[in-house]
Each structure stands twice: as C-alpha cells, then as structure tokens.
Image (cartoon, rainbow, N blue to C red; front, side):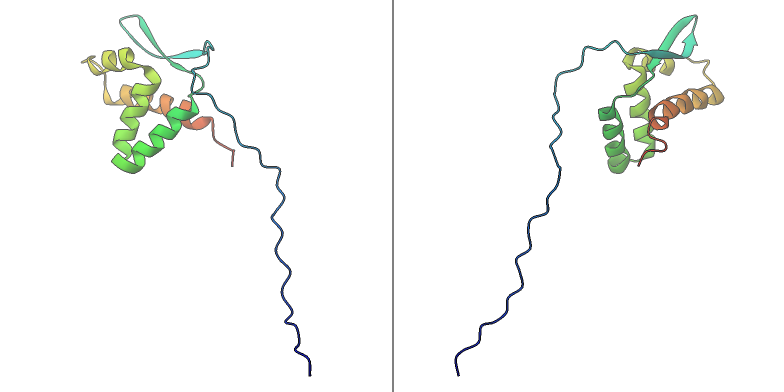
Length: 119
C-alpha cells in the first residue's frame, strides 16, 4: 500500500490593510495660537491656549501614571499657562482656594474637553 499524504492546513495569508504610517515632524509649527484669558493679577491678563497640544496631554498622562494626579495637575497648569503665569499665580498671596480651583478647572476643561466624545 502506497504511503498516504498528510493533509495540511492551507497557509494563512497575511492580512491586507490600508495601514499607512503617520508622518510627524519634530519642528514646532509656526502657528499663532488662539488664547483665552484664565485669570488677572493687578489688571495683568494671563492666558492659556484654546487648544492644548497633544504632546502636552501625553506628557501629563505619563506624569499621572508615574508620579500621581497631584504632580500631573501641577505640570498641566504650568505647561498650559506658561512659566510666567504660573510663577505670578504662585506668588499671589491673595489667591483663594476657590479661585485656584476655578483656574484649575478651566485648564482641565481646556485640556480634557477636546477629547470628549472621541474614541
């Protein structure tokens, strides 16, 4: 009796996708950003961008994972406001808890409000 051939399963074909890698640039875009006022100290306006850059969001998520929510919140405020505004607020002895909470909430809304409803 001749040897019988084993039936082999057909080889799986590589999946066909329309995947294309995302092309990024490390250069800062030369776009003038729209800003909104978030607080005033002695009639000096301090602003934040209406649209928070995605790299800031990624950095904040990493800080939250590695160092906790408090460190991430502080880093978000400083990144969004800028160092001058953060230092001015930090040195303003008349700021109340409610005012600080309101400023923090405004910044969180700017940062997180952009991603609501997106999956």
